[in-house]
Image (cartoon, rainbow, N blue to C red; front, side, top):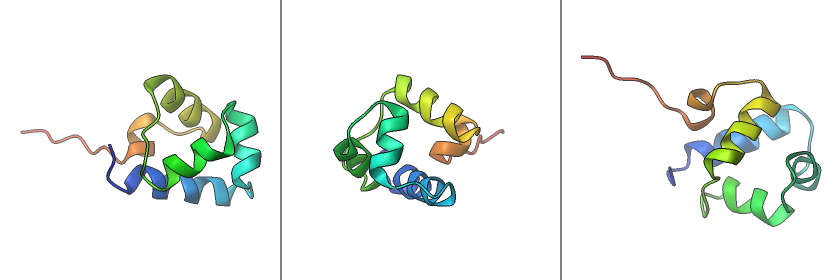
Length: 72
């Protein structure tokens, strides 16, 4: 997932809610550094955190990571 979609999307979602990295980190139970790593595409969240993040922003994991199913 280390393309930039997740990180860019996370940052946009955070800013839409008017949150700083520290505030989002507190709400998700991680450090500010982890938020920074995620937003900059240097680390990927675990499935556990993908679920927490998607739930917090009230979106699907697919939307969060930019997955578009390809049906044949």
